[in-house]
Length: 414
Image 1 (spheres, rainbow, N blue to C red):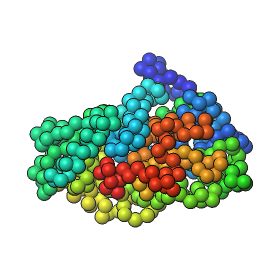
Image 2 (image 1 turned 180 degrees about the vertical axis):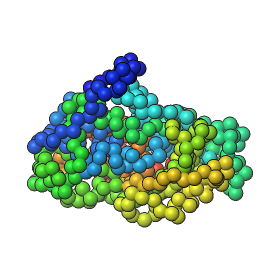
Image 3 (image 1 turned 90 degrees about the vertical axis):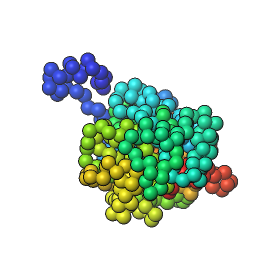
Image 4 (image 1 turned 90 degrees about the horizontal axis):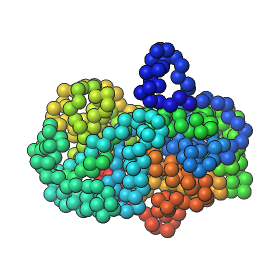
């Protein structure tokens, strides 16, 4: 595998960039693997990488029904943050944010991580009190958070309409939060996993499972049967369908979360801004597009497309907050299919099926969790015991009642 550097780019420029090695291999599947991961998105690829790189498990296959990174990893709005209310969530997402901070060096791939800050604004005095509670909880979790008044918000977002229909009363910011390039994260993990010996097998849809004695023996795929010692499902949006093949029913539902981008403009908005009450969030991508979204659709769906009413609602909220953007044209819209657990917290770890592990229930926060999700699940699979950061997010919390209701605590409006 080529090492990416300024020198290697200069050297290859003299040959017209024709001598680069493949970023990852495209092998035919073997009959048996130590670990088979279903889903070549961020979580599946990260899990494979950390298994091979740090846990010494190199006989690993990642199966993808379509193309690498073509699911939710390529259908999100790229936000990275750790400003969660509960200590369990804060510790996990802070680990992920710390991994993001060094991910470019770790993967020898520019993931375009930009710590431009995540600014949350509030539009009523009641909401301001909730935000103070939230910001204080974040600080008690050992994570940076800073309350802002109206004037300070103006410094971070000069074009904001502070006196909109629901006037902005204040807010808080996590300055270490920001965004990264979603495709680059998937490609970087794929490249390093492949270099470590992982087989990434695309166009290999799982159509069934062969089970016996509460174990999975093999997967039936479009490219033949593939057996393994351990299996993991990292298929955001479709985990319940695959788990059903193993006779496992999960407390999750699938909903669509829409994102949309405008035509590109010169750099004008240098933060990530969210409003829960008006309900929109916006950032500017490295290509100059304004990336925006809002709440998830309120009905179950597997469709990877947007709906007009959600688009209208999101853009009406955006224009209310930022009138300067009113004349921009929308360029494209998409939807990611999210697995939503009942407490809006993830479910990661072992299942009642003896050799089956899951990474699901990420809801709308799966992208920011990719590094920690892969790292912690790889540890769990290699050692057959939960990583300490994953202990609160086991499946058995739904029978014991130890729920982590981030949907209510962290202002997630879906």
